[in-house]
Structure formats: structure tokens, C-alpha cells
Image (cartoon, rainbow, N blue to C red; front, side):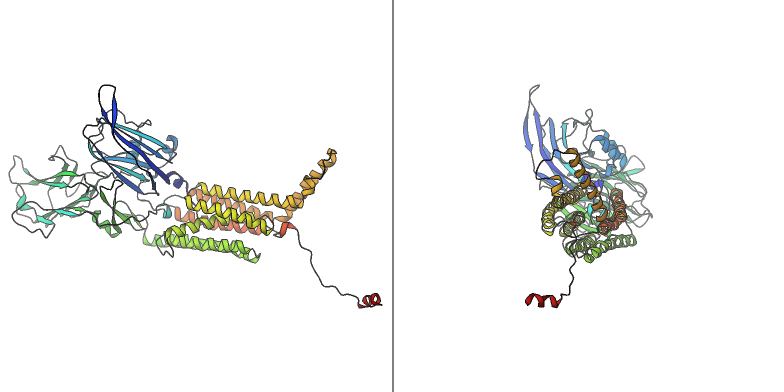
Length: 612
């Protein structure tokens, strides 16, 4: 059976970007809209993301953006929940934003945002990533003092961080194309263009008023290539004593730089990834989603070691950092505007992170998790066997199909084997789970087959709609149980209204209140006796205990412990169904036992007498 946790309710949402406009300031107190943009609905699954590119003209004075979503999280809930599970929207100039997933950064970024949609003071938001939590109705107003004209990227993130939560993390495969890749070569009279690396010592400057010299390299990132990653690598036959400073739009220096790295240390940031080795003979780093425009790399080096060592340097634009560490596949996609191609790593089930470098689960742990999630569905044998023994063939088919489909769904979800497409298996798992829960309640009411078929038909339509429109919503569990209870009460109403219609619907109104009260009292005690005979209450209690354990397992599911709690959910929910089925004593039509038939011997002499 399927279940969804509380975190899924918070982050599984539909975001609709209504409008973004730039206003031009005219005479004092007068402004008018010079351009606007609106788009339709965007659906994001858990831990999925999307980008939108916006170009601001030089003459704008302010920009207003309005976002509507189905996220309904107040500030009190926001304080209690982990920041990495919240849906956020991020802004960045020049390149797609990659938010820092640390709790400290997200907490500081969220606290700086005022609820009315503006940012405190005239804070300049250029050259920084700004992230704010999504709300049901969010309006952001930014002035020309806070942001500069040019290319801006808006990122929509439905949860952050390298998390492995089975179906909660499942992201539909995007259309894959060849990423934008190129490499940089300095303008020199020697060397070959067949290789992306070039010798460095011949290019180093030997003039300086200090003990160290500076050599600069300029590189232009073309329009539309902001979704690529800038890769810089230095390799030497001895320990490297160089320092690299990088800056966008100007010359870097010791006092002014965007990123810094040497053989032992480097700067930090969500857009910077250093891969230096321990020997000190290699400097390697990535600038993730580098901004469009001119970049400058300043190489600070000693003046006395020219031609002593053999050092090569390479600067390139790569699709994915470090080829996703061979733990995933590199794909590319186009932003919502269709003007920028960005690359990303689609990690395997055991790894996460931007470059798939974070091991989320060991291969042995993956194997055990897969076994638990698939094998725990064997608990469906209990209610299936009892339904078959009682010749309740409809319930037998439902429980058997539910256990099989759930096992196939989780086998596909963990990456073992997919007998059908993931969406089909997910629908079958949730729909049959919903039907199994409701059928358990309907089985406990002994109504005629015609009424039972009618209730099953209505319930199958409702549960199919629930599975199609939002199978993983947490509210579905409450809805399905409520439907089952209503079906049970309605079936009991049909049963007792047919069996005891004369008691509470007499043909004439009786003014004898004592006698009427006595009839009602007699009917009530007969009802209690019927319920007492109808159910084995000890097993009914066991069923409620198992159901409480199932609800606890569903409540305790988190990103890290999903596999164990969801496996316990399978076991407890099927066990509770078995106890509920077993607790029902009679399952005849309307609870009335059919008279037993037996053969009788007839006296032949009496027939002879009658003939005579």
C-alpha cells in the first residue's frame, strides 16, 4: 500500500506565475508600465525546479512580480519546519541561481524578507543569490536601487538538498540535448588548437614591483550559455605555488575578487566547487552556471620559478561538473523563456548533490532498503487468504492486486526493475490501496450483493480520481478512511432499515409514549446483541491497534527513514485489514441465516391410503 508523509503535503504544489512588470518613473508621483509578462501554471514535483529568464531595460525604475501558488504555510510553520524542505523562489543576476542548502543561509535569507514583499532598505541584491519562501499570494517589489538592469534569472525550487525519498524525489526525465561545451585558448603564435590545455610558463608575466607577478586571462561567456559551468584546471609536475583570483566584469586583485583558490584553500559559496587533490600538484575548480559576459582570471605567481616546472592550464565550459562523478547522467534543458540552455546531473538512486558526489546510501544499504520495501508487501497474503477462504472473491482480488502492484511499484521506484511505466505503477499502487481500505469497511456490513456492487462502483470512481489528481497527497489518507466509514455506516443503515423497518417506521402514529419508548429500547438492545454476535470484538481491537501503528508509521516517515517506516506501514495496514475481516462473524445477506435443508423420508402407506 502507499502512503505519503507530512512533508509531501508542504512541498507538493502547483505554482502559477501571474505577472512580472517593469515600471518607468516619469514626473513626480506618476509612473506607468512599460512592459509586462505573464505565464500559465507550472507544476513542480518534490525536489524539482525550473528557471525563468527576464531581461530588464536600462530605464526601468522598479519591478513588481506577483506569484500565486497552492502553498499555504504560515510563518509559525516556517519556523518549525526544516528550511531545506520548503518551496522557495530565488533571484540571481546573469546566471541561474543555485541556492545554498545550509540551514544558516536559508534562515538568514528568509528572515531578511518582509512579508509585504519588499526587502529592507536599499540593499543591493546584485551579485548575490536571494531566496525567499513561497507563499499562497506573494508579491515582490524591487527598485532600480536594489537590482541593476540586464539579465536576471528566477529559479523555482520545490524543496532543496540532496535527499533520497523514493517516490517523493522522483523527477520526470527531461528532454536531453547536447550541452553547450567549449574551451578557451589564449591568442599565441605557437601551440595546437587540438587540445583544450596549454602550457602556462611561457605566458607568465615577469615584470612586477613586488615579489609576485600577475598574469590575466579574459574569457567571454556568450548569451544563452549561462547554464554551463566554467571549468579551470592547473596541473604541474611539482607542488603548485600559484593563486587564482576570478572576477566578473573587471580585473581581480587581492582586495577585489569573486572567487579565489590555491593548492590548499579556496573560497566558499553555492556557485563554487573546488576539487583540489592532497598532493598540491593540481588546482581544479568549477564556477557553476557562470554569468553571461566577460570573466577575468588573475594568476598570481612568483617571479623566480619561470621554466622550472611544467604546468598546463585549461579553461572550458562544461555541461556537468566532473562528469557527475560517474554517479549519474548529464542532461540539459531549456528555461521557461526558451533562451538559455542549462545542464544538470540526473543522479542515480544512491547519490545526490549538484554533481552527484554525495553518497546518500551505500550499495549494501540500497539492497536492504529495496528488499524491505518490496518484501513487506507480502503482508497482503493475510487478508487475501482470509477473503478467499470466506469466498469473498472481490476482496480477494483487491488485496492480491494491491500487494502485487505495491511490490512492483517499489521495485521500480528503487531502480531495480520497472515492468510498466512509473506513472502507471504509481496509479495502480495508490488506487488499489484506496480500494482495499474502503472494501475492508464495506465487507464488515452484510448487505445484499446488489447494494454492495453499487457502493463499490461509486467508490472506485472516487478513488480513481484521487489517485489521478494527486496520489501522494497526505489528505488522501483521511479522505479514503472517511469514505470507508461512510460506506460502512450507509451499508448498516440499509441493512437495519430493511430488517427493522416496522419498529421505527410504524404504519400509524402511536400516541402511547411508554409503549413507543419500550419499542425503541427493545430495538436498541436488539441492535447491541446483533453487533455483539456480528463481530469478534477481541480481533476488532487488534485491528484498531494495528491501524494505530500504521498511522504512526505514516506519521514518522522522513527523508532518511522512509524505507523502514514505509515498510512497517505495509505490514501494519495489511495486518489491520486482516483483523477487521476476521472479526466479522457473519457475512450472509442482511445478516439472516438461511434455513438448512434436509431430505425427509415419506411414508408410502399414507400415499396408498389417499389413492384408495
